[in-house]
Length: 168
Figure 1: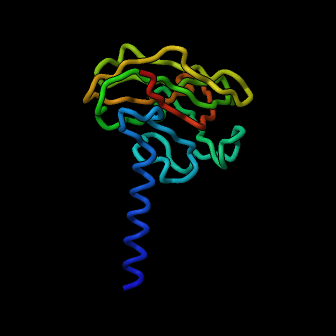
Figure 2: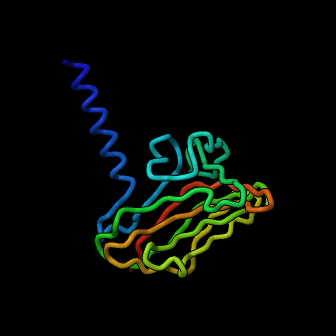
Figure 3: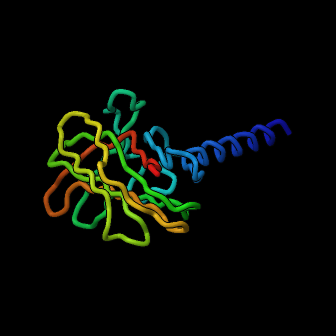
């Protein structure tokens, strides 16, 4: 009986911690944050897994960052939110490190993929990248993050402390 209670507690705790990662609260400033520390941090991500973790991190970046590299099929990694409960403006920031020719992090919406925020990771040392522009996401639509490094030419980058922030 104690094992069942412990297991239930761990499941509920895991669910709670996962839900804390994505804030759908219209009043919250941080909409999404990820430091890629554990396998749970990969929930919802496509194109990356625990093999992409690297122990090269920026200051305050915990113990892991995520390694992005790939071929001509892009995006190399992507994440999509649930539908936004209240439309608004959003900005993107992350720490990035160019390992070979750099790469980019994109924030766009499911309703308008032509307008996006693009951060180019070009510095060979860890650097804070913040978008100067913002993007509008209507109620019910989804925010999408894509990360790419390389296409026909090999490339690689590290990303950590990835954040989407509400700015309205």
